[in-house]
Amino acid sequence: MFTILDRNDIPVTLTRTTWFQKLLDPAKGHPEVKSYLSGIKETIQYPDFIYQSVRDPRSKLLYRAGLTSGKFARCYILAVVKYVQEPLGLHGYVSTVMLTDHLKKTGGLLWIR
Image 1 (cartoon, helix red, strand yellow):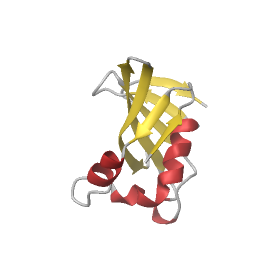
Image 2 (tube, helix red, strand yellow):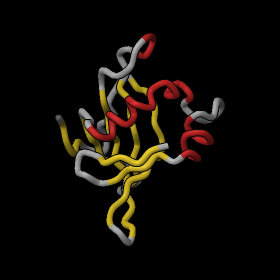
Image 3 (cartoon, one colour):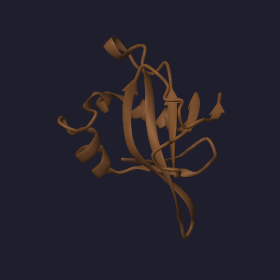
């Protein structure tokens, strides 16, 4: 779907497979994010908060407020990005994206805007 640079100039990729088979899956995914593709990009590039994942030390939770509307108007976009060391350097891959009304603070705050 896209590859963009995060706030630390590390490339982050959202694959078509993750988008269509994981995120938009009506049973196990988060199809409510379908209309927020540009907001997902903005969340990765300009997050408001970055927290460490408690599930995977390679993953970060990137939050951005103010990009949603309608019944999700008070929600953050949360992009979970797993950073992997590759031959050409560090590369991030979007694991999942969801809309949430709260910050998951258990992993520890890494950065705030």
